[in-house]
Image (cartoon, rainbow, N blue to C red; front, side, top):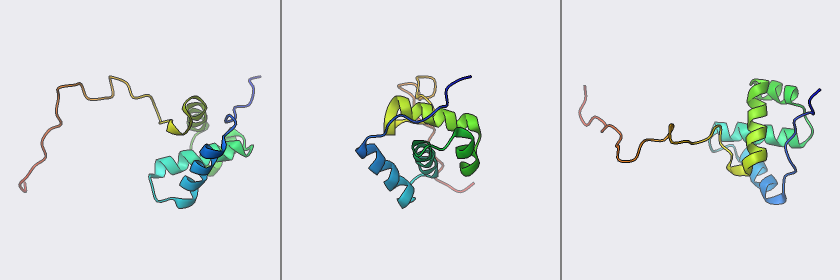
Amino acid sequence: MAERLRVREIDDDEGRRLVRIVRRGSGSVVTWRRAQMVLLSAQGMDVAGIAKVAFTSEDRVRDVIRNFNADGCGARAGPRTAETAMPSGTRAAPSATTAP
């Protein structure tokens, strides 16, 4: 059987930043939910319990914990690769300036 997935040990700065995100709640909802998942894991809650509290799948919780363990507070939902970024030299389509 595989070992239970837990977040790595959180240093003081990361802990303060995560708690600030969860308490303030004024930023991105996605960031708030990720911070909540990481803090719950740090408190010893298992993946199934976190998924239940956060109303998400266990796979999503595992992804968030793995990303945090790898990248710390700078972790994102997925890697930003050349395929997901706009190619250099291209511009976004201009927005409409008149009503349809």
